[in-house]
Structures are given as structure tokens and as C-alpha cells.
Amino acid sequence: RTAVDVMATGSYGMMPALNLHSLLPPKISGPEDEAEVGRHLDFTLRSHLLNNKIPSVCSSVLIKDGKITLTVDGEFEVTLSLQLDKPGHPWKVEKIRVLVRAEGYDEP
Image 1 (cartoon, helix red, strand yellow):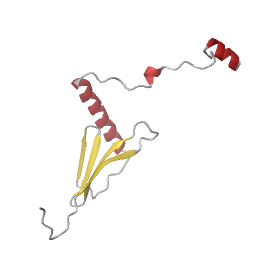
Image 2: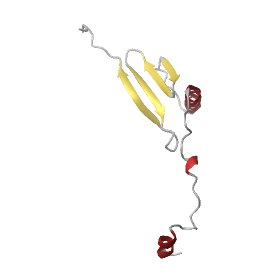
Image 3: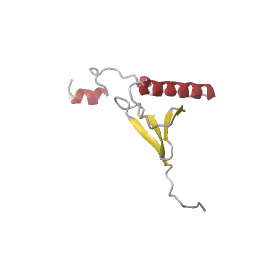
Image 4: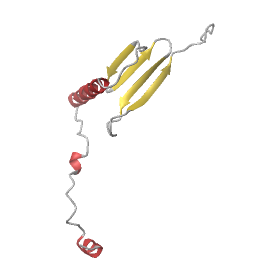
């Protein structure tokens, strides 16, 4: 087929059919679906952690709502999620909270 054929017919029969519905995430229709998605994300995070070592300095590890929060007492807290749309599902830093405080400083 030539470009003229494609322009005349409005289609190109040699291209494979694409099912767009398979590319879209499922619709969340209520609290039950939200809870199920949250459980699935938490499970995915736990599975991902099996292949990654958590540093021993982390005093707390919390997995909730598709995010993992790692805490190093007196230093920082970091919240991570997975980039499920990228190959290998790399980590994404969602939030960093610095816990270090100057000595002798009085809060207002």
C-alpha cells in the first residue's frame, strides 16, 4: 500500500490491531476497589523489597498505601514508591523529612 491508498481509505490494513483497554489501568469504582488496589501495591512493594537490601541503620520500615517509609532515628525519614510504568520498577522519592536538630536551640 502507498500513502495515497492510506489517505484515500483512512486505514492501513498491515498494522496490528491495538487494544487500548489493555493499556489503561482498571477503573476504581468504590472503597472496596481502593482497598484492593492498596493491598496490591503493598504486596508489590514487599515483593520488590525481597530483591533489595534495607540498610541496617533503618530503625523503622512502614509499608502503607503503596508507599514505604524508612526511618533513621534522629536523622531522617524517607518515603518511597515504585515507578511501575518504567522498566525494572525503579524507586521514586516521594518525601524526605529531616529529623536533625541543632543543640541548644529552643523552638519558638
